[in-house]
Structures are given as structure tokens and as C-alpha cells.
Image 1 (cartoon, rainbow, N blue to C red):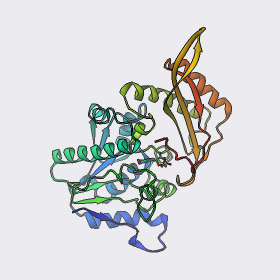
Image 2: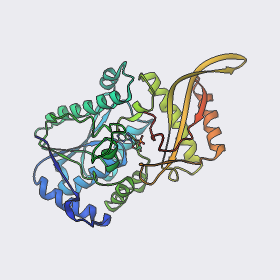
Image 3: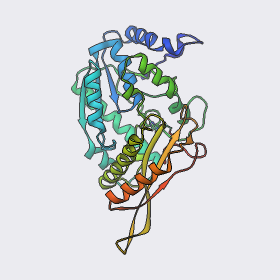
Image 4: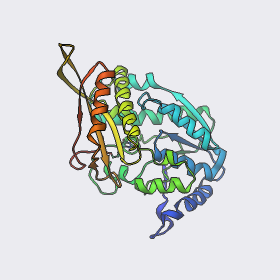
Length: 329
Ligand code: XMP
């Protein structure tokens, strides 16, 4: 039987500035001497959860970072570094790239991709938890928009977020802890700063649990993922050089499953199309296209096509949410 520990029961008019303090006290009492395992994804949500629970139970929290092969360029190293520098917790790094890619081979349906990744995540944690001895609780960084968009709280399903829709029933832990399940993104950031997390981590743009799997459209391969990692890195690099890293809510590259005709040194090419996406939003429930300066876009486009020979066209996504979602899948 799975037990979900709610947080919002503190008060009807709870205040975000009291959230960290009250949550820490609550979880300290609820978890007591038991052990918890936290899934670190590299994103703000799981980082805030890890900080919160580590303050509540200290060394009884172990964080696991699974490299599913779907992270951005340099991301795994970055995350481990930030945590080693800022937390007094055990971090276990698990390389499962080959495993995830084999499970995802041939899968093209976005919902199926999400479900597979979500399920495999939980299995990996179960396996790792077993190796660590008795672990009682699993900590997850589900936030309120994840629940709404996954059809919870009386809403229609938009897409299954891996930490909601893909969760198997036989989870194998005594309880599931979702400390920020009532919060919007901006509130999660406020709590992160209250907890003393570095601004660079708290202000980091969000990254979805299924990672680049929902940004490589259609079937996944390591080659496509590597190509996307390069394109995404170039776009982020150009945004950073323009001093815009923290001024745009979320920005990334997508590898479309289109091919288009181009020309290179008088030769016809027939190559891949990269899409760039940049949005501004308060809470990710609605979002509008970020007005990225044209020079930044064209610089990124030129670098992507110069540095990645398999790409001959770059487009910029100019759709708001709704009708689109932020991610393409
Ligand atoms: P969408 O695409 O639903 O994205 O408009 C809204 C925000 O949520 C992120 N996102 C996810 N985060 N698991 C996550 O943890 C997921 O399955 C997932 N899908 C989307 C997305 O990057 C954006 O910030």
C-alpha cells in the first residue's frame, strides 16, 4: 500500500515563506529515523526536494542520480558538482544509458516513451534501494502543474508526466513523499532560495523528467540524442553569451523527424531540421514565445548548421501555450 504524505494541510492560508520551515518540521516528525531515497534529475524540483528532506532527516537521505542517457550536454557532471558543493548528503551516480535506450528502442509514441521512462526510473530506484539496505520512503519532485496536466485534481489529461502517470502501483517503498506537489514553479524557486540553494541552481531553467526523449521526435537513437545535445548546447551557449540565461523561462532545441533539402558547396543536401523553442511563463500552465533577439537566433542557427553536418535547416517555434505545450512531445 502506498501512502502519500500531503503537505498543504498546514493551513488554508499558508505562506510560501513558512513552507520550508514547516515542511522540514513535518517531515522530520513523519519520517523519524526511517530512511529516504531521493531521485535527482538535475532539475530545480528534485533539487529543492533533496534540500528540504536532507534538512529534515540529514544523512538518512540518499540521493540517486540516474544517467538515463537523456540528459543535456555536461548536465550529469554539473549536477553532481553542485550537490557535492552544497549538500551534506550521499549522492549515488548510476549509469543506465544503455538500459534506457534499449527499452526505448523502436518506440515512437510520446505517451509510451514517458510511461517507459517513468517506470524504468522507479525500477532502477528499487534496485538501488535494495543495495542500500532498508529504505522506507521515495522522495519525488512532482509539482502542481504536473498533477493538473496528468489529469489529477479533476482535470483532463494533457500529457503524462513521468513522476505522476508512469508511476507503477507496486512501488516497493513504504511511502511516497512529494513535498512540493502543491506548488507552482515560481513557488518552488522561492522555497529553494529559502533553503539556501545557490541562485545558479534555483534559477536554472526546468528540464523535464523524460529529458531529451521528448525533444527527439519519434524514435530515439544515441546518434540522434548526441546530435540534439550538440545543437541544444550551442543554442544555450548563444543565449548565455547574449546575457539572457535568466531572462527566458525555458529555451532548448528539438530534433524534428523532418528532413529537408539544402545546399552545401554547390551540392544538394537532404538533412535534418532542428527547431529552437524559447518561452516565457510565470507558472508553465500557460506560456508565450520569448522574443529572443533575431541576431541571437541567426547566430545559433549558423553555428548549428556549421558545426553539425547532419543539420541543414533551423527553425524557431513561434507558438504560445496553449495551443502548444512547451515540450514538443
Ligand atoms: P509542457 O510541455 O507540459 O511543459 O507544457 C510544462 C513544463 O513541464 C516540463 N515537463 C515535464 N517535467 N516531467 C517533468 O518533470 C515531465 O514528464 C514533463 N513534461 C514536461 C516542461 O519542460 C515545462 O517546463
